[in-house]
Length: 517
Ligand code: ATP
Image (cartoon, rainbow, N blue to C red):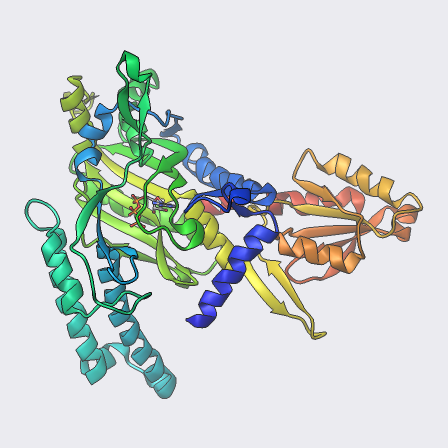
């Protein structure tokens, strides 16, 4: 674990050193859980967004996009339930003065029991080899059984307090923390305050106070911008059920515990798609979208073993089924995307609060009804972090040196091709520029002439550039260059005229999209 934490620290500093992510207002020592994307970060982020947007809007005839404003009418958040119920249960440790989310403390305790079981299984697997029967081992091993029992008991209690009548049972939560002997990781003590609710929405004012300013909120999710536009899009787009509306945009949450770099931010970006369907078909569509979204993730080639579904114990006030897609980060499996069956809750609430009829006339059934909704909601920044974590490697080379390389999927890499003149003379820089001038219209290219070639390769490895081309003496004679592959470090001589066809397909988002069909 300590080793994994070390790796994570390295990734964070790599992000800063190579222009991916900076703390916000860095010269003023940063702002808690707010980050800026640098020259390479913004390219990677844009590519992630394109991959998502195109997979939704280009590959589905019945999905269209919108771009709603961040500010919304304040009644939106009354109707959605966020004013009354968008709370996190928080608890303070009196000795360290640190604040935690009580639900997260309990979930971490559950994960500890799971970890213990997993370790026993891994140990036994090594010992018994091919003859190992996991089901039998789980059913008979004393230590596994003890931990499973503790897990089940805690899980049951946790579900009870989270789903208590009238909202979360805050006293019950504190009692669990005390009974489980959960200590503050900083002070190591159990000196906890009571659990309190904390609303996560940021407030601001619109209009000057003199003419009666009204309180408005920075949206805590992009979804509501879609719901309030359901009628507009359905009518003007003449959309027939089932259909979806996709949106990418900023969301804001005043997170109590903002840790782990861009995993939990106060200002972040979401990519959400609300899919409107006939009531009664929601569980089929829920299963379908689970599969579609998992395929989208696994299509990046990071290995199926690094993903899992995690079904929710506590359903949000609007949902009748919910799951997370989790990715193996250096600090464990963590949620990257949520898939929720939101029933007709949001549209009905907006109909009630606005007094408008928000329904769909179904020509096949000759009746009107409020559509049900399946939502897929993914954080751009968490996706960015998972890609960084998986791609980062400090690689031991055969000659004893190490190189830091980002094995980014080529289609997401900020720079696709770097072009180097071997030296700064004999017309090599001009030739290199000529190549860039030709290819820059097709993908992102970068020119570099400073330092030795070896150093230039390393710099490109560190930003995940999949291809480097070197212009040398021979180029001037026969128009060939060396083309170096980032991952294998192999070099081959190719004609300049072939470069585009070799590279373009591999680095385009289209290449990823084609694999989805
Ligand atoms: P968590 O339980 O981690 O707080 P959540 O279940 O509240 O997340 P959702 O409301 O389902 O998250 O939001 C959908 C997605 O938005 C998440 O899967 C995540 O990728 C992203 N997201 C949510 N909160 C944050 C945040 N504070 N910083 C970055 N991304 C976030």
